[in-house]
Structures are given as structure tokens and as C-alpha cells.
Amino acid sequence: MNIKITGKDLKATDAIKEYTEKKLERLEKYFDEDFNVNVTIRTEKNLQIAEMHVITKANTYRAVTEHKDLYASIDKDIDILEGQIRKAKTKRDRINKEESIKIKELAFVEVEKPVEDEILKTIYYDIKPLAPEDAKLKLEDMQGNIFLPFVNIDTGKVNVIFKLKDGKNYGILEPEN
Image 1 (cartoon, helix red, strand yellow):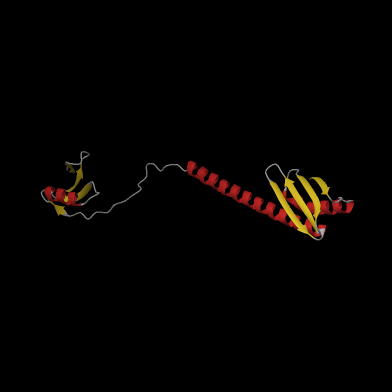
Image 2 (image 1 turned 180 degrees about the vertical axis):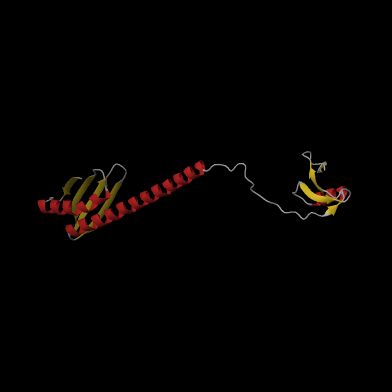
């Protein structure tokens, strides 16, 4: 942490510098890298004003407070800066967590292999004895279906009537035996 303390219309005494440095140590726990702090103290009328800028690689944080007591003004600045830094860190951590979850989800989706050579769906039909023409009429009424199994009245065997790809004509599956 590099600290620069400047006084305008007010001398930055050793006591003020030591107090400010001691209070700024609270901010070190939030940063892994080195950061700079510019502190400006001044007086206006009967108020003591402390202005602090914390400059990191990623962000700049600023706090300005005024109080009758300079030490109280410095304390308020530290509290404000700590709140800003904590909020930014929490937001950054949340974004990083969400991004890592998305990456994990994408990795999981990419690893998932399509199912092949498996029976995925079973459809149950009520097979009734019908003439092939009646089966065709019933299949026309069943919108969305492209085939219908039935027992052929003429042969007594299970047949399947289906719509051909042209969408206009029909075919019948009939066992040979």
C-alpha cells in the first residue's frame, strides 16, 4: 500500500499521518495486489474535510467527508471506502461464480452424448378388426398420426396402414404368413 497525504490550508502532522496509515490498514485485507491511496485534508470555515482516493488496477474508490473533528472525518472515509470495496468485491465474486456455473453447464452439455440404438418411446394402440378402407378413413381422422395398426377383417392378420411421404396416398404393411 502506497499512501500519499497532502494538506491544503492544514498541515499534515505526524500524528495525523500515523492515524491515517493505521486506519487504512483495514483496507489491505480486500486486495491481493499493491494499491495507492491519495489522502487530502483541508479546512473550510470550521469544518475539517478528509478526501481519500484508493486506486487499484481494476477500480478507483473515492470518499469525501467533513466533520468538526478531522479524526472523525478520516474514520467516516475509511468506513465509506470499506463499504464500496466490499460491495464491488461481492459483485465481482457473484459474477465470477455465475460465469463458472455457466461454464460448468456448457461443459456438461458438451460431454453429454446422444442416445443411440435404444428404444426411447413406446406407444400403445387398441387394435380393432377393420376393413382396409375403414382403417384408411380412421387414419385420416387421426391428425398427427402417420400409421394405424388394425386387424384385417378379410385375412384375420395384424396389418399397419400408413401415410406415404407424398401425404396423399397410403400403404399397408401385411405379414406374409
